[in-house]
Image 1 (cartoon, rainbow, N blue to C red):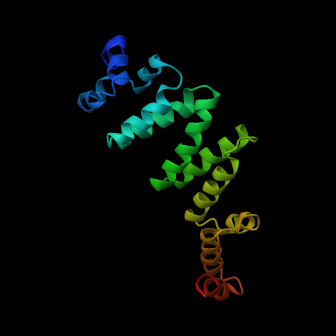
Image 2: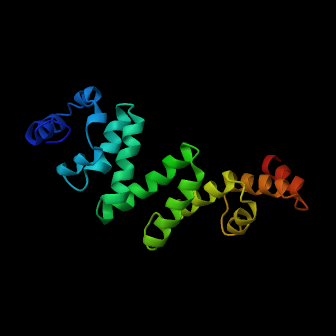
Image 3: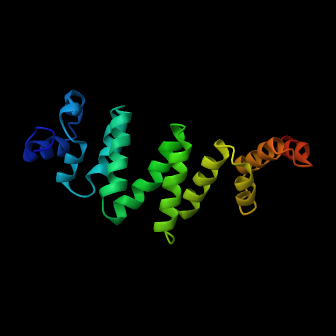
Length: 169
């Protein structure tokens, strides 16, 4: 069973794109990890299903489960989304920690640049300006130029007004 629904019935509902039943489950009575009975990829895909149903807290839990318990491919995919979700939720310290774990584990991933960028954003919002400035030397985009201008202003680094002017003129 998954959340008190027989595995065949649960699978049939999902196969028929009948996701509405998920809105009526009292999840407090169950372990969210039960979703893994559907397969190692289930937490990752249920992130999207719950997100589509506007059940954002459940979607977030699916990402955490995928990041913690799924095999490599699903864990890697969930890691990128988890860092992004943590930043959206203003949980910058957790986002930074997850990003660093991801970068340590998936050095050769095609998502390394994305996670490095998210890591930089987590540092920025924590006002860890010295670290941000070091990392900004290797990045260049309009948003990161804004980060550099703000961080330089906060640190009162000579020339910071020019960085703002360069953004707009």
